[in-house]
Image 1 (tube, rainbow, N blue to C red):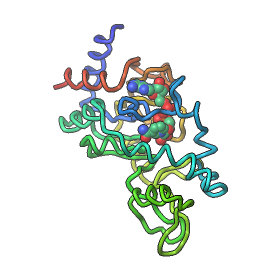
Image 2 (spheres, rainbow, N blue to C red; image 1 turned 45 degrees about the vertical axis):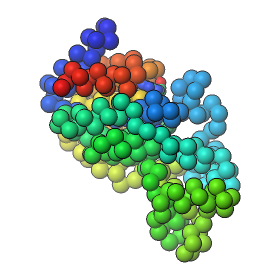
Image 3 (cartoon, protein in one colour; image 1 turned 90 degrees about the horizontal axis):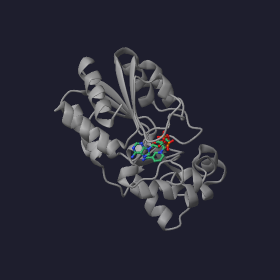
Image 4 (tube, rainbow, N blue to C red; image 1 turned 180 degrees about the horizontal axis):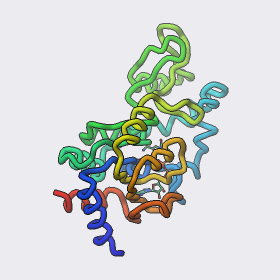
Length: 247
Ligand code: NAD
């Protein structure tokens, strides 16, 4: 099937089902300059091990490693801007075709592009909180303390450690994941996955709630054989072209 034929098939599926839900991963933001985890030759995993440097275990047992090595990845993400793929999804929501968007990304780029119904199931980088008194602070507070070598960063009120509002490896899933699950379980006739290797659980379990599935990804995934349509192309270009077909 040609790229054009795949796009038309995706547009037809969306029209037939009167809309869709989306699930996005790190591949959605590589075109904004944020490296993903697993693209061969470019993924973060080949440079630092995110489990060793940015897990709950690292935060609790080796906060210096967490803040000196793992944290640089988070701080770098906050400089990125949304790309055409993020804007296309926001437009599709305005047209009433995208019903809601689950993202594994912590970069906040869907919200910044104008998407409204977003479940950030791995958290975000807008805030941090204190592990003692649970007060919330702007994420910038963490960045400033780390830049001033105040490691680990501390709460000015109770002197416990601060941490980012992201779901680290080893953390329980936040309430927003279960909200997304409940909505998809009842409503998801069609899901479009963009830019995810689909190896991170429990997010990948959400796919079984969809009756029909479209996958846009540069590399093969374990769910390709279950999908009704796989488009092996970049998210930015594909979602922009899909928006044009559905206008
Ligand atoms: P992943 O790195 O495991 O997989 C990304 C997939 O996207 C790969 O299969 C790759 O082939 C594909 N891809 C890369 N660029 C693409 C493009 N332009 N168009 C289409 N496909 C493209 O990412 P994941 O599945 O999201 O899982 C990794 C975890 O890492 C997530 O839990 C997420 O929280 C976290 N993460 C987030 C960010 C971010 O916020 N931007 C960045 C890195 C990792």
